[in-house]
Amino acid sequence: MATHTTKMLIVGSGPAGMSAAIYGARAGLKPIVVQGLQPGGQLTITTDVENYPGFRDVIQGPWLMEQMQAQAEHVGTRMLWDTVVSIDLSGRGQAGTAFRAIGDGGDVYEGETLVIATGAQAKWLGVAGEVELAGKGVSACATCDGFFFRGKKVAVIGGGNTAVEEALYMTHHSPEVTLIHRRDSLRAERILQDRLFAHPNIKVLWNKRVDHFVGDAQTGLTGLALVDTLSGENSVFPTDGAFVAIGHAPATELFKDKLEMDASGYLIVEPGTPQTSIPGVFACGDVMDPIYRQAVTAAGTGCMAALDAERFIAEREFAAQKELAQAAE
Image 1: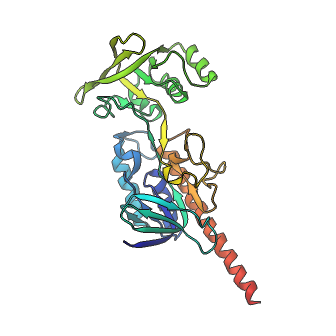
Image 2 (image 1 turned 45 degrees about the horizontal axis):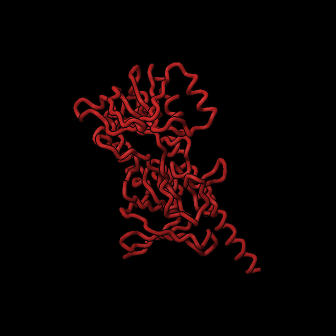
Image 3 (image 1 turned 90 degrees about the horizontal axis):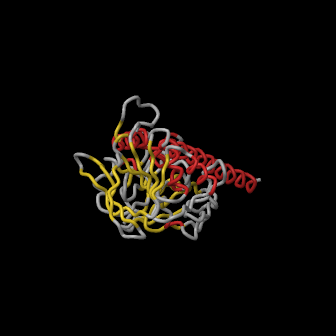
C-alpha cells in the first residue's frame, strides 16, 4: 500500500479525464489519473468513430483513447491502474487539506483538487444478442451511430424523453423509424410526444417487449424478436438497426450524500462551469452531462475542469502568501 499525492487528482480516464490530464500537466500540476474499471471509458468499446474533430477518415475508439493517454503521459501525467472504492471530501477544499481517494488495493490518492470524470453507462435491456450485436446494428447512441444507418430502416426502443429524442434525431438519416414501447403510453414530455406523433416518418409499436435481437456477427442485426405484453403473441420485426434508449446511469455512487446530484444521479455543477458543490472538486464529461454525452463535449469540459483547478490552486496559494506576509508585518 502506498500514498500518492498530487495537485490534481483525476478519477476516470475517458475523453474528459484525459483532456483534464493534458491541460493539468501542461500547467505544471503533475496530475494523477486513477483509470478505473474501464480505462479509456466508453470509447474503448466503440468501434467506428466518425464525428471526432480532426480526423477525415473513420477512426477506432480504442485507438483514439490510446492516443489521448499517450499525449497525457507525454506531458507529465501519471497513469495508475486502480479502482477507487471510497472518497473523502471532508476537507472541503480548505487550505492545508486534501481530497482523498482509496483504491481497492488499499493505496491512497491525495489531491489538492479533485476532477471527477467517472462517466456514465447506457442502460441496456439485458436480452440475448444485445452484447454480440453491439456495434453490428445495435447501439445505445443515435447521435453517435445514426450516420451509419443512412437510408436504412431503424427501430428505437424505449418510451421516455431519451427514446423520443433519439427517434426524432434518426429521421435525419432514416426514412422509416419505429419506436417500440412495452406500454400503451409514453413517459416523455408532452411537447416531445407531439413532435413524435406529428412526424410522418415515425410510427409506434405499442405494448411490445424485445425478447432478443436477431442476427449474428457475420450478418449483423436483422430483426427484433418481440413479445406482445398483452396477448403474449410472438413476432419478428425486421430492421437494419436498433437503438436502445432507456436512459443512462452516471457513475456517481461514490459521491452519494457527499456532492449535490439531480434526481437521476448526475452531479450538479454551477452553470457554465465544472464546479461542484464543494470548492476544489470539479466534474466533467458524462457524469455531469445528461444532455449531450459526446466525446467532444466531454473533452471540452475536461479542459474546463483543469483550467479551473489551476485557478483554484493559484488563488489559494496567493491567499496563503498574503496571510504569511501580513503575519510578518
